[in-house]
Image (cartoon, rainbow, N blue to C red; front, side, top):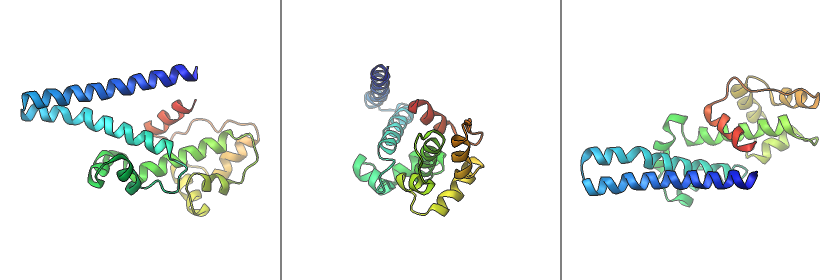
Length: 173
């Protein structure tokens, strides 16, 4: 059930924070370069997950920017960019999350919606920019995904998606 999945996620988050805290505590007690180095990865992973959840919760907000994330989560801009370096940067991460949400909305909507409405809903200010970025990401236009859905076809899994896209789809289902 949804409640059970929420509880499992909370337990997993607490375990991750607990692991990071334990590693940090060991580093403080041992006070060696190796123990401080060992503490970096779990702490960064916990911070990344915290930011990822914040982005997911605020995906529709037009104010979702790196500056907002830094202010709300108490991170320096430099550290935020470091956390998202391997994802192409925080702005790219947000854009890709928004594109994935639009893809899901277009592929599963039960109501007739304008594609531009879906784009605006997820923070895209310019429909032509949205369409170009969508096509670059998924290899098809938003109208093709929407038309396939309306025709009763499942646009299917997207070959061009990332692990983060897959994780997002798994969390949504």
